[in-house]
Length: 608
Ligand SMILES: [Zn+2]
Image 1 (cartoon, protein in one colour):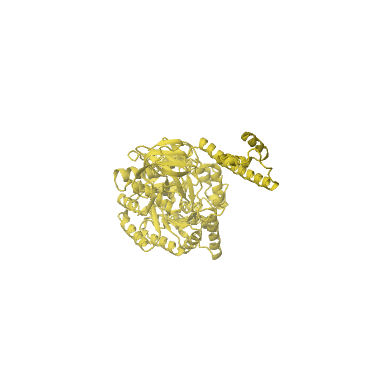
Image 2: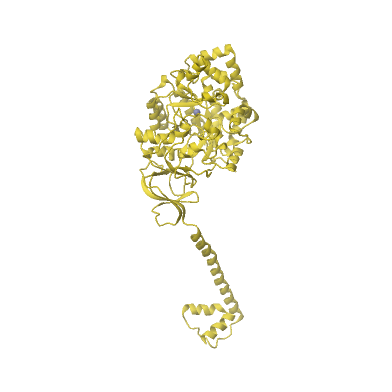
């Protein structure tokens, strides 16, 4: 009877019976139920619909969750047993790091958590990926987007664009750099930073990259290479170009005031341009007007630009150059400490070698660059002008960075990267050797070399080790490579770069941390990660913490080392066991994977 009642009820009205059944009670009128009224029937039907709907919703929610839990584990990757140095300067601690969808999803004891892959980091340091404060890879990333020289150092992000940025571009600027584009086999098919970033994203990149817009780039767009001052209208055009670049995603405005036509810019022009960047949350980064006899005055100029443009200031590759200035780093440090104490947001970075690397043509006084490289070559060919240049270089001056006065002699200059293929055999040779080879006075050898290749780059041995170490130790000094990403293979491998291109970060870990004990490992990692991230407002990188992008390096602090030397620079560093960029290994068990997981990092002013 009960059954019959249930069956009957099933036909007509399931829910009341089920409700009774659930309550474990007998339905009161199992045999002789009065027929339900129409209203009651409708109400019952409504209740049935509600229950079915709730049931359906539960199925819709639970089944995919169950399926997901079966198909995707909690983590894509768990790094276990490592010493975590989180980038903040805190001492190392033990723990597992769970990575999911490119980000650090958990840190703690994750031994039982499901995961796709485990990396055992026993005996190794696990740290945030290194940030290169001046990377210079904007062109070479188009040649080899993996950037082997960078990732083997543990670099996962670089900031680039030193005075001359990748964009904006016009036909005249492209024409002046034709030999460089040809050398790298690149067709410059972008005109703005936005278009360049789009090209990068289309091709893929091994590391993350951000860029400044160069004040010199903007100047060249409007004024060309001449030694002249902008009219108010021209300055407005330049400011507009800075605004456009900031909206395209630049992280600030930069200068490189040693190289023509940059020195022609007065401080007021730079304040005007930096102010525009400041309105978009950008900063001002600078290769200062002088890094030798007038270095303190140059710092004053950088501080004034920061103060009047209301922007933070980053001093690139801080140094005291030239034999006459050796031992003056304490003055520079005291000056910056005083400025910081007075409220100036100023910091710096270094590559921590005693040789710099720059344009060979930087030895020539700025006036002789007026009009660009073709005019420079004409002047070097003209006997009277050549003599005037020689005289200027032989005269100590505080008005320009006279590098000839800063070196001990022609053996302090080593030829690095040449653009003229006929000069390739001279890469790695000292100017003293070339002078002997050509049977010329060293200064004539320099002039004649520039006539053949005005775009050549040279290493110059002109700093003292105690100055370099003291700068590195300052808590406001981060690290830069100041060299484009390169590779021992292909056309990039034919160049002869400064060894910092391959070695900067591992060299600091080997020399300054392990051998000289000038820095603790935790302080070095802080300089490599949280400090630069904070400078560039990269709020989701630079520290190992839940929610941050998983840029991670794993290395053995006892063995990590640089191999590149001035004589034999094309050697990858050793010891980076794993390098993850946005959670994806670009180095896996010490080998390059070829993955291109990098992202363009756009500044605060970016408008899509
Ligand atoms: Zn520089």
